[in-house]
Length: 270
Image 1 (cartoon, rainbow, N blue to C red):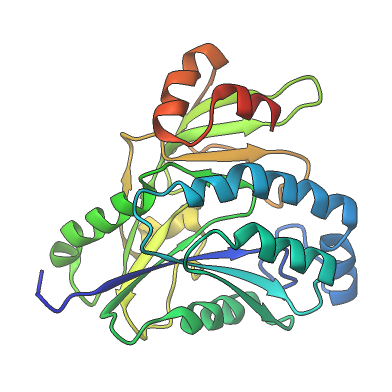
Image 2: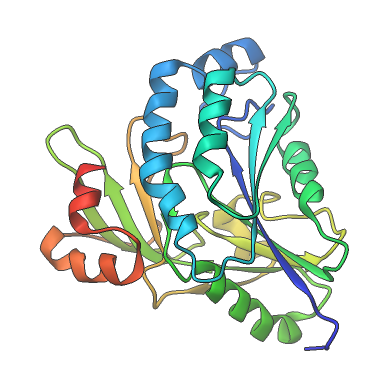
């Protein structure tokens, strides 16, 4: 690794952003899409998970040197925009980017570009949804992994890094259940792409499951690195691509508390 190497880490979250495309359950009519995304009952459910699960995991990161972009539509009602600003205020590096409804990939490219720093030689951009969580060391592990692998993969070639071990948290009226998963293809939660600064390609360019077909890709299978929530508002079909095993809360509790800023009791009630 050269002495001048400076890797800037930027996360991007699409917070009910009404993009043209980018949704599995989408509608070509932007008004219909906004009506669905901005439904107050739906947004209240999203904020419950965002405030109780996603934000605590970002605030608990052992490596705090990262930017976090929250991409929203300019049409998001003020009451929800204000609530978002309040929720992210404690997070250093947090920034809301409000755009009109644009094609999905164009919107995320613009949002990433707004956060790039002049001093950076490379950018590691990762993705995260507003209802999922990362383990405490996710950013730190990402930084170490990129620094170790980039000289091998090539300083100018895109490098995809992530984790494929974690938990699916299924929300049910009768009580939440938890599953341990080990994915065989990359999962999108916290998945990152490292490129030289200024390169327009980023982690949203391809379906995350197919990254290994297009890029040098490394995923860590040792650490429980994510919690994915399964619920009625999921846009995509929440299924694991590899091993999935239901586990008891008693068995899961020690690992959850060792790697995440939650207790098993908190996740049972989230």
